[in-house]
Length: 415
Image 1: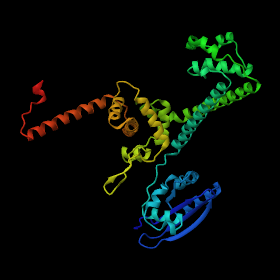
Image 2: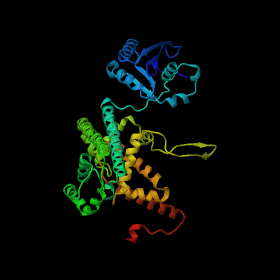
Image 3: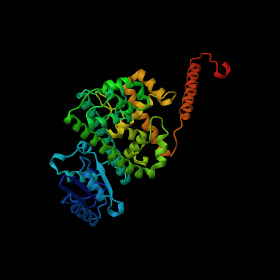
């Protein structure tokens, strides 16, 4: 391997220790190797940062396995006033590079690959985007917990003989929640009390609702329902606090949120989740194909001996892939939309699942171009491109017909 860096360092990060291998010397000669072990506590990481600065090492690489690399990255990104080049490389890529990895220590092998310029860093967004990502991912986990708790409450009501969900679309709406609060305190509810609690369109099913709650809870069932509802209220309050912090973080990205919100199927919540995953600097991705591959929305390339094997999508950012597929599913329900019509056309040939993933990929390409060019979504641009392609197709057909000596009537002559 041809070396291109005079000073570099490879880090083998563990839960409690970090092994650093520093290679220093002329690129034409054998480098001097220095190996040191540091603690992953803050004092140990600060000591490693000072050591690297004293050695004037501005290029550091580490594996991206687990979450143990994150505190190391947070400390070292401030070295040399933020000018240190940090590479968080894919561990699988390191193993695929030919070499004696099994015979060498991990830190030394990482430093050797870095010195030769054979490592390509994974995408690590800026610190503000990483903070935004923590909040959006945490919000989604809280919502999943709330949904799980709602299902738990519904099962408890069913086991006690209360069939609210049979006649109420959302038992946690105004009417359903009022009835459940009354049951948690009294264990039963009369027909007249039901009339006082039922609001809005639910009054159309008032007779059925009275029959659905014509039961009785014992002391244990009543107290258990009270515990379940209290846990749900606590998580609602916690979700409100998280969303308040999230709004403060999103204040500086209003322009990008408006760009994404203009795309059919994307609302403010989805826009925030997408921005938290890809950031706003699209120069970190060479092309739209690169960001699609990073998100796991590109078909696999597995061919051997002239035979193509599985082309299932590659592994990527599962959070981004999931939210884009949800957006794509919403787009399929929008009428008179280019993206929706494009999905139904692809579905006829490739099936629903492949068409959905293809639509998610198309949406990501649109997002990439909007953020890169600081543009707004314009539905008419697709129609113009479609007309341009149609004109080109007609011209190509006419040219081929003339080559065959056929008599051709130009389109304007027909008009």
